[in-house]
Figure 1 (cartoon, rainbow, N blue to C red):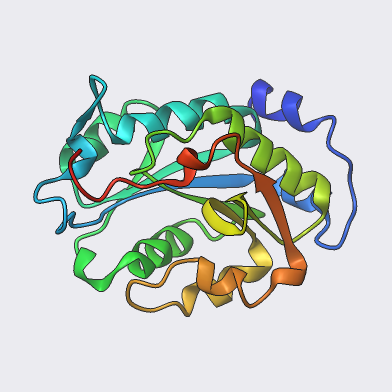
Figure 2 (spheres, rainbow, N blue to C red):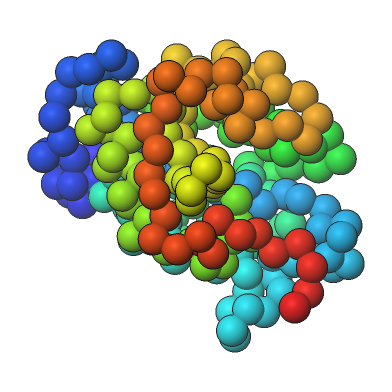
Amino acid sequence: MNGAYGGQLAAVKEGGRYGTDLIIEKGIALILLAAGDSRRFGENKLLYQIEGRPMYRYAVSAAAEAEGFIKKKVIVTQYEEIGQQLAGEGFEVVINRESHLGISHSIHLALERFPEFGAYCFMVCDQPWLTGRSLKRLLEGFLESHKGLGCLTAGNELGNPAVFAASYREELLKLQGDKGGKRVIVNHLDDLYLCQAEDIRELQDVDRKE
């Protein structure tokens, strides 16, 4: 356990429905999902420049701000360029060679590769306005809530990132096609911690060029 990780979590209370102490011990894996085909965008949108930076770099920066709550950083991608870059920045790289199977396949690949964690936070890479502050508040609030699920929200909209206790792993592995973790969340709203985004724009993804 690195110092930043242990230091940030030292103040989080133990116990709760899902044994927050056990989640802390096993750790949270942050999984960046970067394997989409960008059909509506017309090119690999993750490399598209937003204010002078490739779009995916904003997710990487947000992850860096929340490292105190993350035990392992993972990127699931079909793009060798992105994988090679992040391999040199402390990410475990999982290559998705069957992106046509939808986002559920990326989720499956990550969970099958890393079955040992206490919770999994999934985060897409096409929300360039998401802040590291919001990601950090989500993870901290999730641990303190003793809930099994957590997600960022704005008003009544459930958004990304979303975090799942390991007890939901099997349910996530049953997802098919382009159905993501929200399918699991809506079935267990009583076990959901909601973290309010600072700005509704943080939840907006980019599907078309501006």
